[in-house]
Length: 441
Image 1 (cartoon, rainbow, N blue to C red):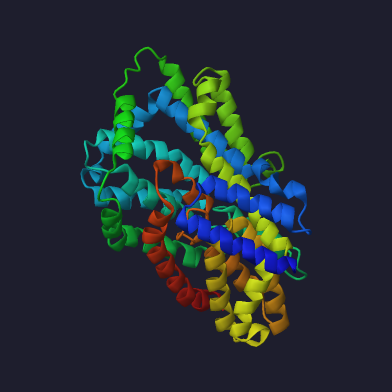
Image 2 (tube, rainbow, N blue to C red; image 1 turned 60 degrees about the horizontal axis):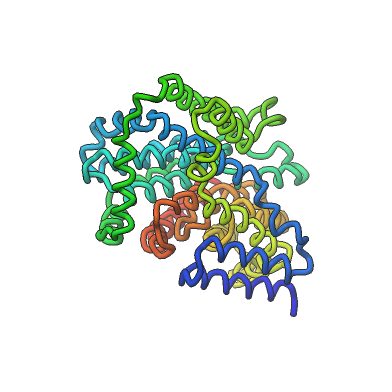
């Protein structure tokens, strides 16, 4: 059996397991990565676990510890109080719109994963202190999806567009690559669409999906409330101040990693680990609690294993077969520029819902560059569409973008993302298909 065929079979089985939740998501991700590594001869065995050493996984671990330190020192309580007392916290719909606005704009200039990692604990505190006005599940999912979409607005917002840009820069005649705001015209419009969605249709959908709190979730809310009401008077104020200072320094560090000479010595993973290490060494959070409470190992396994799965689909040729098949239905390299762009956006968005966006950008970018060159046109518009836009609007599953994956600890089911994220995904894709040819062709 051809490796490409085997890769597609593994993809189909993985999708079925994700949708049915016959196994925990982390197990499905790990099994799919193992299957690719053991059954696809073109894939190195080390690729099964190499994703666990990625900067994204280190970011999730580091910022999880930083977020936990904010809780344990009482600083999260103070920040939560400030959010709850703000005007937007008087109404849940307005609060969601405000949080989506803040997180999406921040993620355009910072790490989108770092942004959601910082806001998840703050949202939890605000929810616990709101006396039922604000439901944690309602806000966190919206914030995660808003953060993912916000990452599409600039070159530094997500690693997917940085990956695509690196590939573009190896193409003769396009060594300068993309600028910081090459994708911003459409990216910021998509942010606006996302905010509007969660203020209207999305809010109504979430009310129906999350209308019943089960006993487990009620217990979680109770536990959060008890944490919020805990007395922090015995904790030195300097620890709370230091926790906040480390958080702010991490934000600065995320920005600096995009510029020379800092990018030679730092990446988002290193910055997050530096912050976590500083807090553990100063006693702001004990090492044992940092590892057990600060790190969500379910998310870590999904992030690390998805990379191996995506690598297998790439090196087996299965991803290329899928892309070529769909594109050939519309004329392949001989298709019109507009049709080719729309098809590329659709294929990339669908595939991103089941692969990491960075890996898919690495897989799709060389394909669209060659297609554009064969048609005698610039590949830049297509790199922007598939590497910067389409790979960041996959909100229909929890595995498409890392920012959405990091909302899993809140207690969502796979189908929760489908019910709420799929309509948004379709709306964003339709908007991108209309606007991208207008702005970039």
